[in-house]
Image 1 (spheres, rainbow, N blue to C red):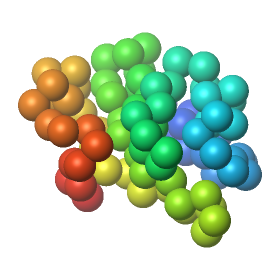
Image 2 (image 1 turned 135 degrees about the horizontal axis):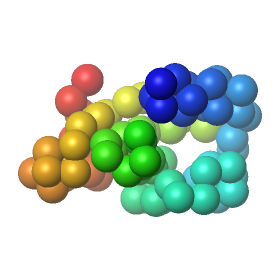
Image 3 (image 1 turned 45 degrees about the vertical axis):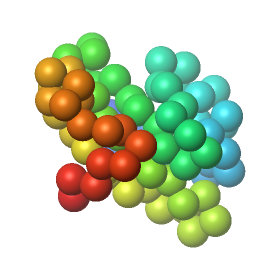
Image 4 (image 1 turned 30 degrees about the horizontal axis):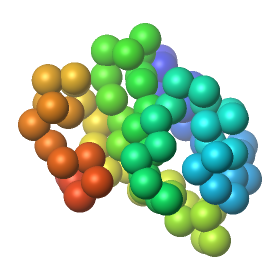
Length: 80
């Protein structure tokens, strides 16, 4: 499952910045200093995650289709 692939990548990582995330996942789009948008399932879904690099925690803020993503504010959404 594509989301499981993202989970494995993230759990194994020790990222200190969004630049390091982008190096590990080149298709990811950095939204700001803590939020990153990932393409999931070949781009069929979008995942917005806020990272706390100091504590090494990833907070999933949104996961949904492109149409649902277009209706949210990716920098402020907190769906979960």
